[in-house]
Image 1 (cartoon, one colour):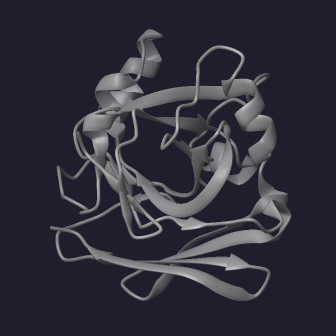
Image 2 (image 1 turned 135 degrees about the vertical axis):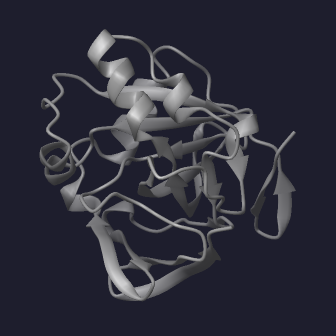
Length: 202
C-alpha cells in the first residue's frame, strides 16, 4: 500500500476522490462543457506517490488543493498534482468511455505532506510555480463546488475512510512537463504561507 505523510505520521489512503471541472477558466481552456452536476472520479491507492515522474509528452499536470479525511470530515490539507494522459483522455471522452486509463494509472497522484487544518476553508488558496514561473493560482472563491459540498456529495454514494484524500479540482494553467522541471507549490491561509512543497520531475 502506498502512503502519505500527515503530521509526520504515515497513512495509507484507500482511495483518492477527484473533482473534475471545478474552475470556470480551466473548463474554458480545455474547451469542455460546463457541468450540470459535480464531476467525480477515483484514483486507487496505487496512484499515490510523493515523487513526480515523467511519462510522455502527452502527460500533463494539474495542481490541486487537497483535503485529508478523518472521521468523515476534513482534518488536514495538502497539495497534489493530478497527472493526466491527455491524448488517452481525449480519445476516451470522444467515445464516451470512463477515464481510468488516463487518470488512474500508477503514480498519477503526487502529494506533498499533509498538515492538520482547523481554520476557515474560505481563507485557503495556492500558487504553483514551474521553473520559478507562476503557472497556476486559485482560491476558495474560484471553486464552483466548495469543499464541504464536495464531501457531502461524495458521501451520497461512497464511504470516505480515515486517510482518504479529496482533490478539489484544478484552475487554469495545466500543461505538459519534462524531466528536470522544478515544481514549487505554496498553500496560503489569506496571505500567510502555511505549506510549501517542492519536487523535481524525474
